[in-house]
Amino acid sequence: MEIFIQQLINGIALGSIYALIALGYTMVYGIIKLINFAHGDIYMVGAFVAFFMISIFDMPFSIALLVAMAACALLGMIIERVAYKPLRNQDRLTALITAIGVSFFLEYTMIYLVKPDPRAFPASFQLHNFHIGNIVISSKDLIIFAISLGLMLLLTYVVNRTKTGKSMRAVSYDSEAAQLMGIDVNKTISATFALGSALAAAAGVLVGMYYGQIEPLMGIMPGLKAFIAAVIGGIGIIPGAAFGGLILGVTESLVSGAGYSMLRDAVAFIILIIILIVKPTGLMGKNVKEKV
View: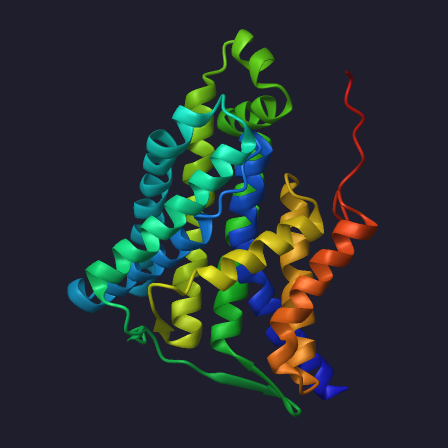
C-alpha cells in the first residue's frame, strides 16, 4: 500500500508536467484545429532559456522561470505568424506537415547553437525530503505541483473571466461569427499561442529542475505524451487536458513502480489506441453532430 501511495505521489508530479504541456496542445487545437507538434520543442527551448538565465546571469529560479515563459510566449507568437498563419486556409494535412517541419527546425537549430550533449541544470535551492512513515515526499514534487496548480488556476481565470479568454472561447466556437462581432481573430490566435507556449516553457523548466539535466531533443517524448494526455481528456477541452495529464502521469508511475519501467512508454501509446477505439472524443469529450 505504501508503495502504491509513493508511486501515486510521483505520478501526480509527473502528470502535472504533462498537463501543462497538454494545455497548450488543446488550446491551439481548440482555436485553429491544428495539432502543433512543435509544442514539445518550445518546452525544450524554455528549459534552455532558464538554464542560461541561471547559469550566466545568476538569476533566482522564480525569475528565470518567468523569463523563460515570456521568451517562449514570444517564440510561440512568432512561429504562429511566420509558419501557421499563411496556411490558415489550407487543408489540415499541410498545416500538420508544417508543424512537424517547425519541430525539426527548433530541434536542430538548438543542437547547432548549444551542441547535442546533455547539460546539468543548475540546482537553484536547497532540496528536502519529508517522510510520512515510509513514504517520501520531496520538495521537488511539492514545487512542481504548486507551480503547475497555480498556472492551471491562472489559465482558468484568464479563459473564463477576461476579455481575451472570452474572445478565445468565441473564436473556438465560430471564428467567422466572432469576427463579425468585432473580435480580432488574429490577435486572439496569437494570444492562444502565447499562453500555450508559456505553459510549455514552465513545464520545461520544472523538468530541468526535477531531473537535473536538459538536452536539445528532450521535447520529443514528453511532447508526444502530452498529445496523448490531451487526447485522453478530449483534445480541445482545457479541463480534459489537465485530467488526461494526471491520468497518464499516475499510470506511468504505477507501471514503473510495478517493475516494468521499460514498458511505460508503450503503455502510454496503448492507452492512446484504446481511447481512440473506445471513445475517440476523449473521456471528457462529447460527440458533436455536424450539419451538412
